[in-house]
Image (cartoon, rainbow, N blue to C red; front, side, top):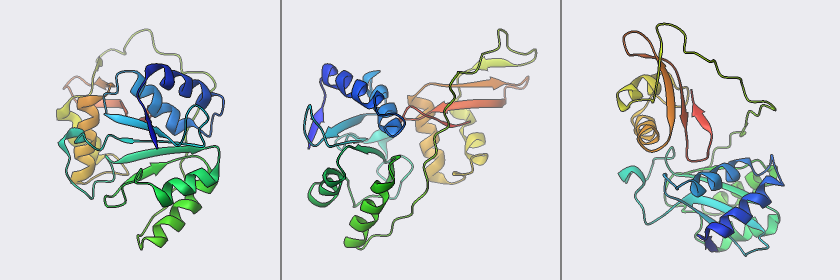
Length: 216
């Protein structure tokens, strides 16, 4: 596998991924986040360049993202994949170390074949894998923002002090690992919230390393 670090290569990859939307959406969001300063310390791998059969994004192994050493933390350890050639994807799972099987992880993709290949690879290693359908919500037109914040409310970034509230109201959270993950998002990536008169968030939106508004 080859790691793409050159801005020109990343730009060319982004253009190629845009031509294959929506199947490329999780990978494209991550590549765009990397191009915008890479605040979450991700990297992009391809099986060949410039004519690639599979592209995978993951946390940089040499960086302890948010100083997290927990091997069971599947919140933080997220990967994305898009393939043009399913055989290349299966070869990546079978013959490379691009996917770290010794730690819990999430892998995001929008191609049906990727799940069967993942399950077969996990079965061969005697590992348990749970599958959830990835659903991205797209709007043909972005919502029109209000010209003024309603009286009594104040626009502000999400604060680390707000993280317990976010964690308690997140259907996929409510535990120590999810709270640590949300804290990392708030400290690392853009966010916004509306604060009520007592400084408590009444509405919020948090960006994740895949370029998605993951929690709001």
